Image (cartoon, rainbow, N blue to C red; front, side, top):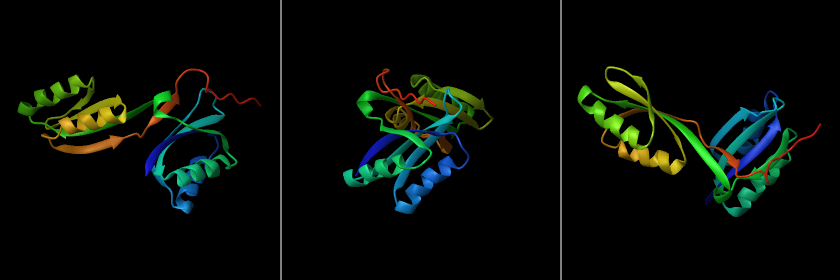
Length: 167
């Protein structure tokens, strides 16, 4: 099993995300993460999907998603030719005595403390998955109360792989 990151450029219409995720569901394919947002052109939405499978399954996914009516472009975002980022919010239980230790770990990773309560902190961190996993690992001595992750968003490097849609 291997992972692939696909970037889709789709029409910005209601139900498009449902149709794409429905294809995965009907075929029994796994979505590890999915992010979507409108592009600079409000007619289109960029969707980043992380999925896994063997070579045959991943090839089938790419072909079948590419055939959907709303899909204007699909491409694989290869790790060495792309930039991936993920946002994570982590709520950590922290007493007054523990607070400085949690803040020190956050500072090392250039994370932001976005909320402070009497017994907890909420930390925001953006980075690649390795950075996020390393950060979570260093919080091992603290009680993590909640985690919210956005999933991967990505773009290919340079201008050679930009998709232009004329209408």
